Image: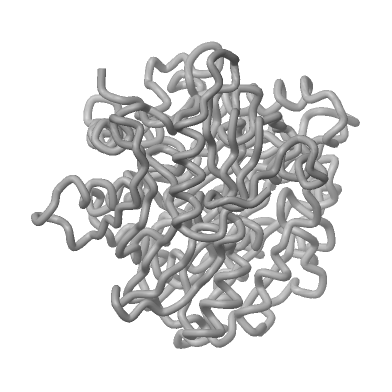
Length: 518
């Protein structure tokens, strides 16, 4: 059914089952209806209709928003969801002369960015590599990707956002918030700032983003995917630990942040479960930077000499990365084919994810916990990986208060992942990843707390783009540090003020949404 609020998909519609879940089949909703919207005015009308037509009773009370559908928790799809407003049809990308910026609609995906932004303008937004991730969730989380060490985060180029918000009377309006509102209209400036790293689904429905001063896309990149065979690692952690130390120490060194040395290099260490064939190493550099090949080869030489085992091609999938057969040495590729190579192989697996930022290399405690979980399970088959991404460089050149992204001193970012067939029981997988995480960060209450003068640590909290409700408290978080501090630190107080101003009725809420001030 069509009306001013877009297409209304009800349970009788053949599209309904497909729209009741996101990319992760772990989460399923049974809303009264789903809205497919194509314009900002349709978003406004769909939201107003949802506000005006609430049932008198019932447990389904939430209105949620979906862009690409990659939310790792049940913030969008859950039993208490009444309406899902799906903006995936809003995927336009175009130059906006009136704004003097490039407009990206909230339903655009990383694949759309590579096709439309790159082909239309030759520019790049330095975001993630997964092509089906939507910018509506990726950007407000402070999205990053393989070009971020060279160019920074997506939010470092965010100029303005258009948001459908609900005022205290329950009326919906479209507002545009811009970084130029600073000192002119502080409420609008704070709304822009909150969308530059404050997480999605907190203040309203983003319909459009505008970006300025985007960097030129690389013409070509050098990409390599290789690894070490688990069967050659032996029964002690010696080689395993040395690989991790070498990777971490490389990106902790001053040369790693230097644009003239390894600042443009992005690398990923894939610590797989021993039931897989190999540990993985992926690296990319813009082939247009001076001595790109020499830099890439120098990095590979450092990693290849870490242990007396040969690096071999990465011919199996690892986590959300597919096999990269034939790329065991640096290979020249057109930049716009990388999204095809990096695409997830399927979305038939359920998954659980956790995260940590690192200010310094992993400690021996961290490495020991990783070895115990990944290498010491005997004949257990487990589809799991702890991914260590290089971070920092250009990311850390932005002042910490210029955006809502707190972690501007980190050098590494970890993503702990486990997967299982969608129809299978998840109990053992959840226990495994929760115990791994708790053991890694057991010295700080089972979570990677941020450092303070009184309590220095090597960790720097968690990434809201990889939400994890286990952070909400015991038994998995015994640190007495709330999830809000782990994600946002001292920025949380300001985000709560934005919430009070722009979502006074707390319409946009989930288990880890910004809380209104009490």
